[in-house]
Amino acid sequence: MIEAESISKLIPVLVVLILGIIESLGGLYFDDKRSKNDLTIELVCLTILPTLIQPAILAFVIFLMGLWFPFYEDYFISSFFLWHILAFLIFDDLTQYLWHRFSHENAFMWKLHRPHHVVEEMGVLVTYRNAFLYYAFMPGIWFSAVLIFSGMIEVYLYYVPIKVSIILLAHSEIKWDRFLYKYKILHPLAWIVERTISTPCTHYAHHGLTAEDGVSNPNGNYGNLLFFWDVLFGTAKITRKYPTRFGAWNKMKEPWYVQLFFPIIKSKDSRSELHSIKTDMDYDPSIDYKDFLTKNE
Image (cartoon, rainbow, N blue to C red):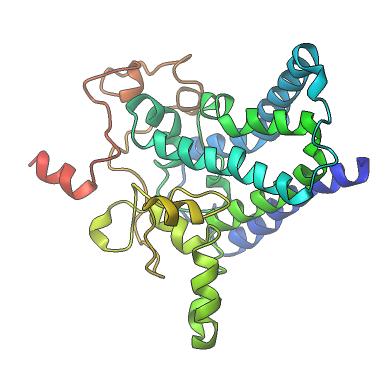
C-alpha cells in the first residue's frame, strides 16, 4: 500500500515536470504575457494545494469520522470496485463540476475563482490557480475523505493520478488532441474522447475571452476529469478549434497574496472587486465580453 501511495503521488509530479519542460522549450514562461506576480500565484498554488490544503482536509475529516462514526471505517472495503469508481466520479468529479459552475454564476465564488481566469495564456501552471478558500471548501475533497475512511482508498490511489493527469493535460499548451482531429480515420475516436474527458480543445474554450469568436465557451465546458457532465447538463461546446484570446474581461490584476487569500486579505484599491466581499465593480462572469463592451459604450 505504501508503494502504491508513493506512485500515486509521484505520477502527477512527473506529469507537471514533463509538461512544464516541454512548454518551456517551446518558449512559454520565457517569452509570454506572464508577470512575476502570475508565476508566483501559479507556483504557490501548485505547492500549497497538494502539500497543505488537501492533506489537512483529508486528515481532519478522517479524524472526525473516526471520532463520531467509527462504525463506518472500512465499511465498503469489500464492495465491488466499480462502485468505488462510481462513488468518486459522483462525489468528487460531479461535485467539482457543480462547484466550478457555481463559481461562474455567483459573484462571491467568482472572486475565489478569478485567479484561474485572469491569466491571458494557457499552460500546465494555470491548472491550480485559485484562491485558497476555493479549494478549502471544495465539496469533492471533503467527500473523498469520507470515501477513503469508508474503505475506498485503493481505488482513490489510482483515481487521483488519472484525474490530475487529465486536468493537467487539458490546461497544457501541448494540444495532444490535435492528433485525433488531424486524421479522418480517428474522428470517430475523437468524437468519443471529447465527449468523455476534458481535452485541451474543450477546456481551452472555457478559458477563451469571449464566445464572440465562435470557439470559446466561458460559461460552459466546466468539466474536470469528465467532460461528460457538460454534455449531460447542456453546458458543452465542441468545435475542434482553439481560442486565440484568453482571460476575463475584467483584467485588473492584484498582488498574488490578495488574489489567493481573499477575503482574508483584501485589495487596498477601491476600484477593485477584491476591495470587499461585495462592491459596485463586481464582475459578472455570466456576461460575455461582447455584451460588456456594448453595455459600456
